[in-house]
Length: 208
Image (cartoon, rainbow, N blue to C red; front, side):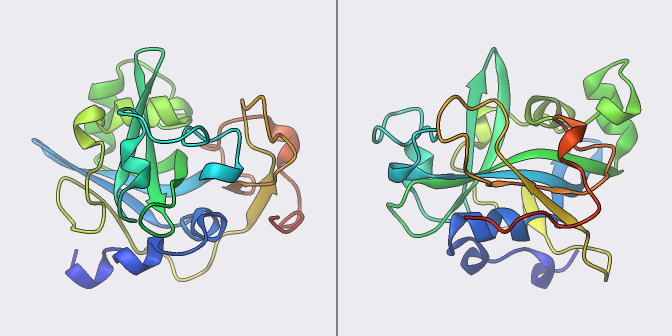
């Protein structure tokens, strides 16, 4: 890895929906004591702060969601049912937006991730945000972590030259703003979580 491969702060300092789409195909990396682990991002969801009732920041800043209000390019890690979920903070400082990284296709350090996850099916190794964090040993210590510095936890440019076929759908598991098509994923990829009905032959409708 070279420093030029790491996604810069300005990548995240854009509209959160566009960042969520553009993160598909990028590489999530975690430096573990025994080596590097990670893979290709294949599923994301955008959450747009004050005008998005499904967002953790919709009702304002709290100790739990403070990282969402920080500079873009930081991580926001939250706890759900004693497990963790990783987000990349997007847009401008003070604009509490984030991209939930829902799944990666494991490519590097697969044996390390298997040790952390235990005896699970390979397809389930990093399929879903909580499984992903468990496989990469990501917890609240990485809340507000700078993803743009290339140490311990970061996101870098895609390895492949061709762009993946991206499908679009409503977000999963939200009870409000269910009509917003802010979930992006690699069409047909077996590591994507959620209903298979959203996979199709084309890119789906545009985000709104």
